[in-house]
Image (tube, rainbow, N blue to C red; front, side, top):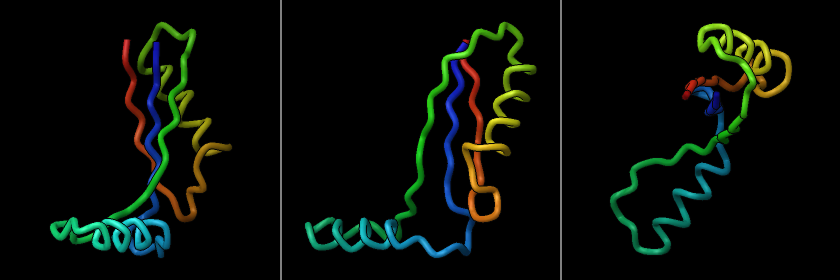
Length: 80
């Protein structure tokens, strides 16, 4: 079973990397980008067979280590 965790900054949190991406894209001539927010993706291979239990376990991982929940939010997608 796989879990994909997508972690992004909460709305309202300053995102200097997103601003740099936005500026760089504009500098390269991509005029249609109104804003950019950056984040990270973590893929986990799990031995669990119950998707509900797996998601709960990954949520615990996010709260304990993977995400800084003060400034970041996370989404979990379970596959398999």
